[in-house]
Image (cartoon, rainbow, N blue to C red; front, side):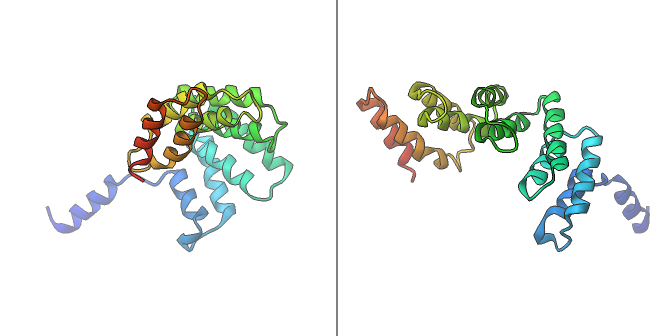
Length: 195
């Protein structure tokens, strides 16, 4: 087989870029090709193709900048589509929106149910959000035991190279625990030791 035929065969075997991959080229300001309109066009194509990541990314892009009411509705509809596909980041994003009252009426119980759905799917962001909500007790009764449980679950899922991000708030929680004892203090010290 000659060199030209080998190259043609290699080109044919490469998978074409997905709508999501193309959208990221246009949505990345560093690419030199930034164009929000084209980026949204390819994300919408990904949504039509049933890609839940495109659904969440579309919502994120639409809601991250100044947007119209029509775009807000489109973003929420995209998140609902992703939820129908049991995509954990969609549950987390809706939890964040309802928790903050951003783009929707604030509804902490509904936010907690979205976080719970995402946490059951082992979504790290949802576990951290749960831990923070219960450790602060701002919109729900403070529950240190639940907060500790969610921090522990998050630490188990977290890549060891970035677990330090959770170490400080978790350690503070452990030493502020009502039953502050030597075990909690030792555990907090072990978490902070690598730092």
